[in-house]
Length: 410
Image (tube, rainbow, N blue to C red; front, top):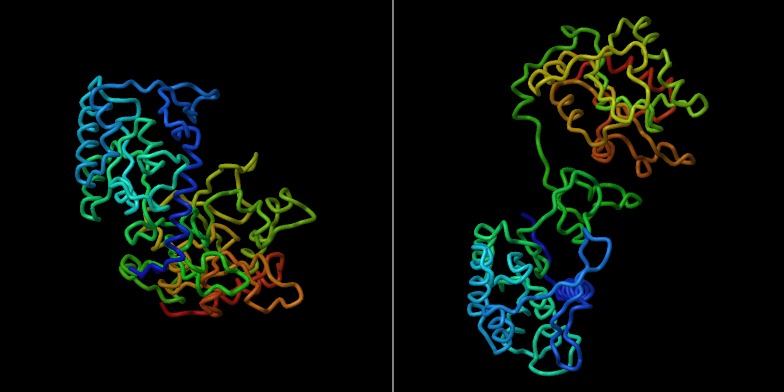
């Protein structure tokens, strides 16, 4: 896995974020400046429309925990007390406070120092000024009844998740942390962690500067070869004159990204368009597609005339169908599909609609946005990929003719 920078500015940023989030969330529950710990806490439940008062029942173990953690404990002693609380709560004990069965692992080393009585700003991050010194965040979570465990290293941290996975309510940890990443298919960072913690299947760092989304993401690619290479290559002359339409939903024919979109005629004109029917008759070509999903298709149930649907296929059968085709035709969606890679692996070219471009500099790929951006910015062009701008009917027709009659290797 790629290295995650550990610079102090990033540490400060994440420490500040954690501090602000927790203090904001629990700001109504912090100890008052008078030093009197409230017995009734205002707890806003997300599933309630109105605020409700939660009375924390003072049971023997809870009373012990309320004071003991402030007396200068080691992280091991701190954890031992809360593990006993978790055990009692999981056993259904009456001594379990409300929220006591909900665990918040604390993987920030300042929490451990706060438990020992440190008065540094990072350790207190506090609203109160009276002694004894303590972390107001731990106080706030404890007063709400939550169980907490201080990090003792990655091995112990992983052990907690295995042992208490049903109890984990949320995690507060110090970033960056190498083992936590958010996997996302799309070309943007996943918040709040950002690009350094986002795994992407495409190398978005090669996208041009004017398309910066996801440039900081970690690229962890994939391959279709293990299954594709098990599908025999079919020479062009042995294939039927078949073009495969890549589309999942029928509504994709309604979208403005559709290469034959008709701004003047609107959706009805697009569904009544006889382009495929005429091309089939003129070029002796059959257009086929998988069965379209009708979700959000309004009242439309059939694609434009000239397209034949087949039932859904298992992946091996799907790849055989692609291998028997002369071209895979993109219609603007779905974006970043693996199917163009499968087509190229099987020796079948792909028509890639370009949906946005600079009208004053239409050939400048830095401004292109297409159905499959990687095929644009990795520099894959004819005869493997035919880039056609949306609305260019003659260019779409010419690309189809050329692709159907031009062989490529796998």
